[in-house]
Length: 162
Image 1 (cartoon, rainbow, N blue to C red):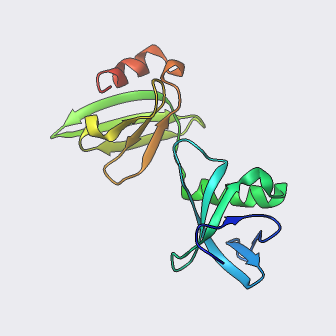
Image 2: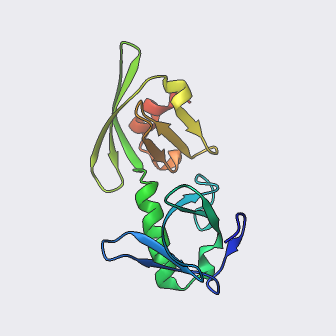
């Protein structure tokens, strides 16, 4: 299989191993694979890089919709696990102490999130006017999908850093 090759359902298929790991089958055999988005913050239904376990590129999925639904769902599930990113719906508190900012938030599932950020101004990434990512000191990401959906108190805690 050539690098930079677009993978199609005519050439490859995806399935789950007995232990739940993603595998790809082609004319050369079956491979455990890892996946990455080419554009993780903008496009999540196309341009998915497929790699073997040594990090060698096997090809790219041009569009998940090209694959049968069950295979596309397996690929999406694997990507969601890799790119897990809680979505913040409420900011409960933001406190600064010794150069660190400590955040207490609630995600869209109602779970409480606690994380700390080193350089807050550099750690809040603007995607567009309403969408932001916050990267904590360990590199974990938290998404604010739409700042206009935050309540007034939450937005006022965030606004000073934007």
